[in-house]
Image (cartoon, rainbow, N blue to C red; front, side, top):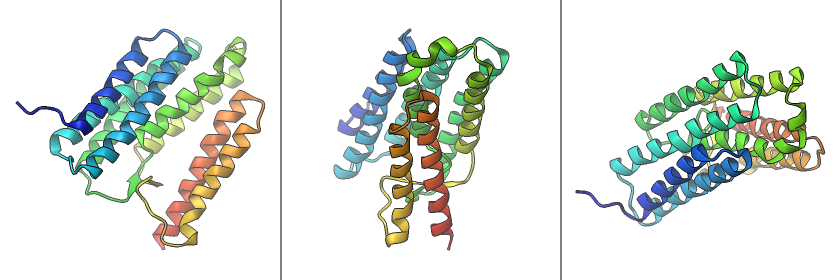
Amino acid sequence: MTLPRIADLFTLANLTAGVLAIQSGRPLTAAGFIALGAACDVMDGWVARRLNQTSPVGLQLDSLADMVTFGVAPALLFLRMMPETWMHFAIALLIPVASAWRLAVFNVRPASPVFAGLPTPANALWYAGLALWWPEFATDSTDQTIAVGMAAASLLLSLLMVSSLPFPSLKTRPRNTKDLAPWILALLGAGVALASPWPLMLVNAAMVGFLTGSICFYRTNRS
């Protein structure tokens, strides 16, 4: 029997955080576990590269953990925060389906310094970020504009996960000043988000900044 290595232990910690997020009945607590899982997901890749512990088993284990923490947990978190309508139930089903497809395609594609499609941790962290400010405007959950806006944003993120649009990776090293543009735009988007007093604008500004940076990344790497 193959024993888990240090990198695998971080992957299992990611999985544990995802399960705890699912079991949690409080959106804020679930968001914290999703964020913890994302940190463990970064660490398992870093440790695997530093200690040369990459393996086919580790790759499959990582995808299984990601499916729980960044596929199922965000869907349940979304349902807890949204009105009980068929539209939001359908979107909640789409989140894990798109995540599963994204992870399966990632496993069979050749290694690349960029991500093809929105990574599942980035998608999940958007829902975790939304939950951080959700109590501030939870009383407006019956507002049709907010409900439809959240559904539209979630639909867009799910479609981006299964798209072929390149997204920058933390492993990507800038070759010139043009390669720094995505990160600059993302930081600007985060700055606008932090300066915004309205939670809905806050999370959407961060998403727009990230997507704008990714589009710029696509344009510079295509040439």
